[in-house]
Structure formats: C-alpha cells, structure tokens
Image (cartoon, rainbow, N blue to C red; front, top):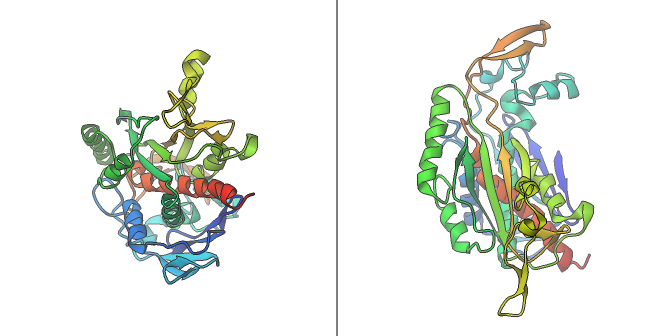
Length: 364
C-alpha cells in the first residue's frame, strides 16, 4: 500500500484502477467523532467521473463501504477501513499499453521497477482513480476539523492560461468556500470559468488535453501549529500534495513570485487587532512562518500537468520489439483533470492539517 505517515495519522491507499476495488485504511483518528455519511458522499461526488463532457465517460458511484473503525456513526478508535468497488472498467482499452508505454505516464518506470508484472489496466496503482480513497480520508478529516472551527476550501485558479479571480489571502469567509463547492465548475468568476471550459473542450476536440492550477486555503487555524525545518507545515502538506497524481508544483503564499520582490514588499507588516490579537496586514507568507502557522489563512497553489492519456498519436517505443513505435491511446480519459482534482487537493490538505492539529490536542 501507499502510505502517508504523519505524527498521529497513517493513511494507506490500496487497490488498482481496474481491480475489484480501491480503498483506504486510516489509523490514528480521534475516537468518538461523528461521521456524517451523507456529507461524505456528497464530497466524494465532487470528484466522481462521468458527469459531463469535461471529464472521462467512465461512470462510478464512488460510494464507500466501511468495514471497520466506525460504530453507530462514530469513530471507535480502531483503524477505519473503507472500500469502493470498481464497476465500470474497460480493461481491453489498455492491451497495447503493456508493450507501448504512454508518454507522460508511469507505464515505463513501473515496467522497469516491477519487472513487467505491474497492472497496466487504467494505470493500475498509478491511476487518478486512487484519489477517491484520498477523498474518503480527507472528507472525514474535514468534518473533524470543521468541529474545531477550521475549514478547507479550494477553486480552479487557472486552466491552460485562463485565470480565475484569486482568494483574498487575508480574509476568506466560509461562505466563499461553500459557494464554490456548490458549483458544477468550481471557480470564483463564472465568466472565467466559461473560458476555461471552452479551452478544455477545444483540446478534447483536437484529441489533446490541458492542465491548470488549483488554489487552496485553510481558515480558522490558530497561531503555533507546526514545527521548524523538516516538520513545518509546508513540508507536511507538500508531501501529501505531491502524492496526488498530476501535481507537478506546489507554492505557499506568493511562492515563486516572492523571488522578484524586495524584503520591504514581501514582509507582512504586523498590527494589533481590536480584540488584542496580533495579525498581519498582508499575507504574502501564506499563513506560515518558520514552518509554523501565523493565525492568518494558510493558502497555497498546486500546478497540475495535462492528462497524459490522449487520443492523438504520440511517439513511444515497443518494449517487446526493441523499436520505436507510435501509440494512439484508446479508452475514456479526462481532457482536463483539474476540475475533478479540486476536492482531492482539499482532502490532501485536510489530512495534513488534522495531523498537525492533533499535535496540540495530544500534547506531543
């Protein structure tokens, strides 16, 4: 299994895209936490495939079956194990890929690492299908965090060079998160969203794909969560975020843009708020200093590459013949995975944030 091992939580992901099922095991959750299954399933539905021409035609209900860890609707202290059964696999679409690895995908590296024994159907354990179990774990983490006044939200910030409005890094009302979550295409500016959708459909018509950027924020975090250097909040979150297939870059706060500024422009001036607390006038740091939360919204952006599985002919190799070859991929693939990845990024962030919050609750 692929595992995320935090200070308190251990989340392990199992299964393959075309295996009988996929799922997760979550160890270390606080006991006695109520889990709203209706709310969890609604969150998973945001990631589910087969809803419109912008995503793959594969149709999966993505309804998890819990086999341990939850009793009478509450976490009971035992590891939580959940399974999602795969019901709409077209494995024959991948028969050619065992010999001709897809450019941009893990087919070749997996072939070398596992000696040709890897499951190539749908990408096997390397498939974006494995993000559904991440959403189970993250959806549960979100509910636990919300009861502590901590909320996580995200939107599509860019697709193929078209940019949405940005979050206000100093003030993000929960209503903004809720409004975006209700949208079929999760953007702040619907006009920009329409332009993005047009870019996606144009790429699809040309047998191609596009990538984009997701902006995510966490509100309600107190000052002092996290640790310096290798256990800082950036480190904890980045490790999980880079476990999401297609994520190629993560920046916190102003990120790379800070490199072009002077210190006087990048530093966040501080002041006393009317309630006597210290706050920053700006939030270029992304709510983190020295790996520790500042009390401001924690915000970051993730860059996601274009879907590598495209129907356009690509140059590859035939492993069996030892010759160069041409591959035209068949099957059902997303022309852009960014819109379906928004809840996945939220889930990944919620897992890392909950693990860090448990530091203070368990006095470690």
